[in-house]
Image (cartoon, rainbow, N blue to C red; front, side, top):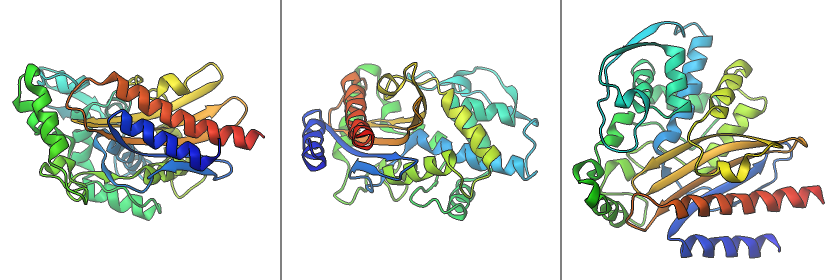
Length: 303
């Protein structure tokens, strides 16, 4: 199947599955890429934790922060489904900066991330990305702002109402009545921007190589692996990634390194128009679309 026919077929699959998506797959050795609306901006939820980790590690490298310094962290005391780690702690904890990086990146701990944001605010994250020539990702707010949506105001049996508000509150220009879903007010980025960041972390770039190595390690140890990982993890490949989830948004970005040397950066950013919190079919569909794009590139280059 030629590329144009494939893209048309995949767009139809997304629409049939109730998803709007922005996808991009890039071969990090050749630069060849294939995508679906890769430049559309989305609120990025926990994907911001990759830039946060990268900039924090660079500040440690430059001596501005001491990675072994313990930080007093207040308990999150979260009781709603979803949050992990310190977000569910009931008592204060003292944790070193480098360990906060692990919690924030590898298990997507929002409280750990906000402890890091307290040291390196969103504006500095964005400015450093621009210095590294990574454009299209903007940090604007802390993770705690993501817990102040209608989802927290409804009982579990009524959570579909929050998703209905998320689905119906958008504008044609990707604004939204909810600040967390408005690309002009939320942490935002595109599939292309994240693939550019992944390329900067996996190949020589403005980012220090020791910093990149540590970010790659943190992403390889990602524990949230129900979305794209089933289609990209195997005995003959290594999948390193980060997910992002908020209301009807489901994202994942990562890199698959094959034993034959081929390496692909992959970004999948989606929003659902189905008012339900649990949608395993959406995760499966995301993975199938990303896999189809990767397979098209991989097989074309092998031939």
